[in-house]
Image: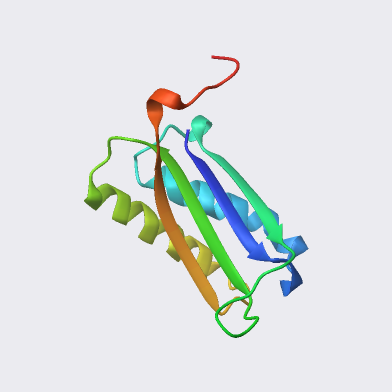
Length: 113
């Protein structure tokens, strides 16, 4: 845990930059001290079809799916740290957003346990 999911506009031509983005987001999450490094899972998902308001501006959106129990200050620090790591990658996105989502721990299932 956690699952860090980076959605991005597929038409940004960044395929060769994805490994560096994954590494940067992984290290940013670990640097907060909230997670064990070997437990952090990061993936990037291109979004083929999207609309941003009335336009088609390229975007990056990160969902930081974590287990319940961290206070608002820790969650805000996590989102700001990951956002800075994303910004530092200099992708051609006009919009960059990050959200922390608390998963319902009792309903979370994993194999192997």
